[in-house]
Amino acid sequence: MLTLDKLNQFYGSSHTLKDLSLTIRPGACTVIMGRNGVGKTTLMQCVTGLQALKSGSLTLSGKDITNIPAEERAAAGIGYVPQGRQIFPLLSVEENLRIGLRARRDGLKTIPDLIYELFPVLKEMLHRRGGDLSGGQQQQLAIGRALVTQPELLLLDEPTEGIQPNVVHDIGTIITRLNKEIGLTVVLVEQKLPFARRVGDDYVLMDRGEVVANGPMEDLGEDLVRQYLTV
Image (tube, rainbow, N blue to C red; front, side, top):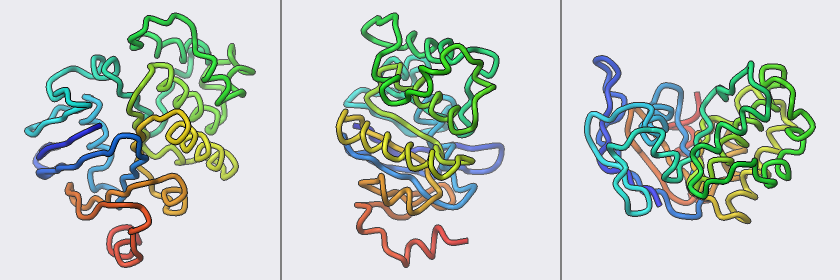
């Protein structure tokens, strides 16, 4: 589905991604983990085109997307839910969702019923401003907006950050449904190990801009947790 080959990226003099190579299995839910500052968000932004690579290549379903702009990557099938949600606070829920329609390949002009099936609260609050929603509701709106684009690959950057536990559980259920029932390939950055174990098929551990370990989630041992995740 997604192949990353020797990615390098710099922030000033800091080498944030170092010859990073990784293959994301189609149909899997892959969880990217690591302590703060190891390059997880940078990696997500490079995949979406929001940050330019210094070197390396990206291939999505056999197509080289290394040099295409972010808006074309959305049209190519990448949906992105950024850290902090980044919804438009002064636009209504409906207007936030409609923004995603521009990236659809089938030309659909109406919000898919699936969005309201997954997130009934959004239908109830369709005309409320995005900024008036709770943190959990805003996260659901951000995921819904990404799904409107008709993605084949869904990227989520810390979707449980700052969310109350009951909504975290609901988001986990939705991620699993999107992955297992609808067939979306999912990649998420996550700090909460129990959540990662619940939703993930595969894990990727990052440290200092590099992949230091990856494999099936059931093979993530406590020795790796202590070395790369425990503060």
